[in-house]
Each structure stands twice: as structure tokens, then as C-alpha cells.
Length: 362
Image (cartoon, rainbow, N blue to C red; front, top):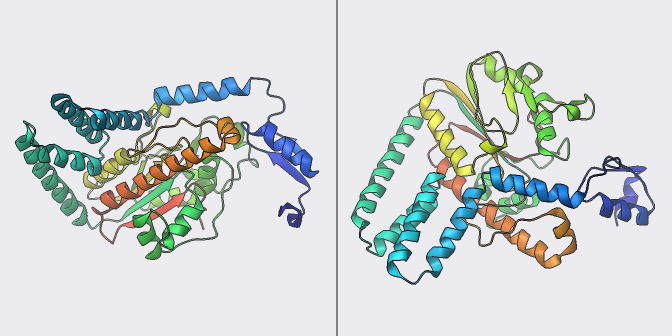
């Protein structure tokens, strides 16, 4: 309804999945449009279905689906021996992805039930707490500079604003927002993540330098003022982002080689602690990139598992509500894990938290 006041001359359709619906709506409103995908003849349903099948096979959220079904098995099981088995599998799966928040919760359940290995689990929990204490001491005794830049992909601005005001479930993010510099006027340079990363680090508009045709998906230190500044100041760079950082220097560690390397937020946060301990005598810049807040919104504490597709969302309001609930589960999971892992870090460590759109050079 507000579109008239912006004096729009032409609309560019940038969504492949929604292009038919968007073009129909634009025509009804009486505007001209350009469809970037008008020459693509492939069947959209097939493309979307194939993309989702590939993601299930190769992606990090298989771990979350596994945890979800193990919880169901444990909660519905009546036989004591089998119930203990499912609880043990649940603990193992949480530890496997370094979700110590839930792992400790389920270990305590195991101990409360007084299952046959309760004593060993109690000893393990004590050892785990000792390890956490040692890690915290090691990191906080390190006097070198540390910067942690965490991107929550596709996290909505409204959720951060409401967290700041204490109006939603993101309690830890809300506390941090109220006690930090909080930028309210930051905009994306594109509609998709890789292009936003190029904008953040290289100050490049993706359509102006033909990088949209570049399938390497790389960040070049020589084209990035901020990365070059870090290198010149002897920072080790640990990159968990989607784009590889390329440079002749050997102080850059790219942890993601392809899609199959995407990690849960808990695994990335554990690696953050690990590399802080490993490079205790060096300056370090760590880039985390969380995908839980991005469709299909999977986290380790989902109350439901729905594999969403854009077309289904457009056509089914009940389905849309369920996916919205799944999104809320996923971002609450991120909030809880950040609260746990960032408790290892002292106030001297610089923390930058953002959704995908951010002008990092500002």
C-alpha cells in the first residue's frame, strides 16, 4: 500500500522461487518489471525439490534432525531399559556437536533416574566442568587482542530490536544489545548471503563488478581494507564463513571447503574456544557464520521438524505459522548457546554480532 510514495519506475524480480507470484502482483499494481530468470526453462518444483534433497544429504542440520527424533524416542518410550538407551544416545549426539547445554541437562536426567552408569556420568560431568574452568582461565590469561565476528544468517532486525526492548525470547542477545553499540541503520548490499559478504569485506556491489558471475565465492585480502588491516597487524584469521579468504599469507585458516563442511553453531563456537587456546600468544580474528536462523530454521531444540519450501509457504497459512514457530525455536537455540559459550570470554575481547546485512567497513 505504501509503494506509491517511493516513486518506483521499475521493479527487478530477484527471487527465482517466487517469480510467478511476484510478477502477477506487480502487474496488478500497474508497474513495469524485469524478471532476471525469464530465460530459465527448468521446472521450478524440480529445482527446489532437488536443492532440498541435496541439503538434507550434505548439511549440518542432519545432526539436529537426529537429536529431534532421539528426543521423541526417549519421551515416548515406556520400557526402562530402552528409555535409558535412548537417553544415552541423546547425550552422545549432543556431545558430538558440542552442545554442552543440552548434554548436561540430559546427563543430569540420567543421574536423577539412577541408571546403572550414573556414577560414571557424574564423574564425567565433574571432569567436563574442570575442563571448562581450565579453558576459561587459559583464554582470560591471554593478553593478546581477540575479535569475534558472528553472523546469524537471515536473522530478522525486528527480533533484535524486540530483544533490545526485552520483548521476546532472545534474553542473552537482548542484554548484549542494551550494553553495547547498537546499530539501527545498517542495510544489506544484496538479497543473498555471499553478495552481502562481498559488500561487508570488499565494499563491492555485486552487480557492478560482475562478481555475480564468479563461482569461486572468495574474499581477496588485497581487495578488503579490513582484512588487510588485520593481516598487517599480525592477526591470525579463523574463517567459518561461506566465502573462502584468499591471500599469499599463511595466517588464514578457512574451515569450510564446501557445503558438506557447514557446521552447527555449537561446533563453530567450540572451535572459537579451541583456536583462542591454540593461538594464545597471537592476535586472532574469528568469523562465525550461523545458519540456524536461515531457512529451514533447524536448531538443537526444535519442537517440530518441517522442511520448508518457498512455494509451500506461499500457499498454506497454517504451514507458514508452523515454520514461524520453528524459526523461533532456532533463534532461541542460538541465543542459549551464545550465552553459554561467550561466558568463557572476558570483557577485553571484542564481540561483533550481526545478521547478514552489515557494512563492516563503516
